[in-house]
Length: 117
Image (cartoon, rainbow, N blue to C red):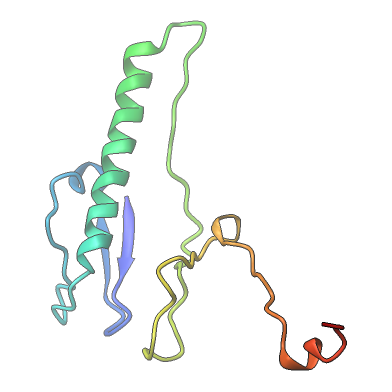
């Protein structure tokens, strides 16, 4: 079960993992704020991966080497609600630290004064 929260009106929506695989659109039932299309597509891929995982475990489990899976939650909403709705991160940016690209520092004009050409 996933909980999606509309940051426009604070309405929460609970959607079962099993019900995500065929969604083409999701919108807030309170204010009709649509979830971005690429977010809906990502949720469908997540759902398919989740359902595939359960099927693999269902078919591959033996009595001595069996696995189960559950989705845990701490009810912390991520990403956090923005303080304002102006601008957005670049396409290459990620919320997740391990997915962020390294920052390459560019030399400032002051730094160039110390360099002999």
